[in-house]
Image 1 (cartoon, one colour):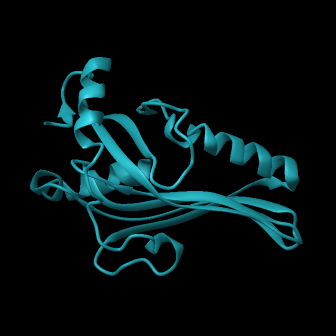
Image 2: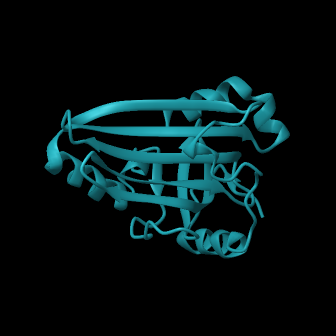
Length: 180
């Protein structure tokens, strides 16, 4: 079942694709590695940006993340923005890049939800499953350092193209991932 198309997939087609991939296994071995050292031999990205200061900034960022707004970029859209941030949940997003539509399915592999005297952290990582266009893991984390009152958002990921075609198109594939 192809997850790439020149035509935008219909809602019925999207349901078929998601149903076909629901039991698919993760496509990589280093599950959970975005928590610590990223594995060698993969393309990696590790970016962080300061969002603001204070508890209200932290709460707004967490709320946005729980609505999957980091995937609502115009050229990338979540299939459903109501998927709960819970280990084991499947999340699907649809992207259109260079005229090609792709359907990408992931599974949440861990969740972080911590709050103590030093700070608060909320985030999660998902891993690629089945016929995703790449293999790997990506984490999203909002941190509030209570000493500095700084709120920051970070993305960490490691990935490889999943097909020979995408490996051949390596520079384009990396450009799309950095754009995301």
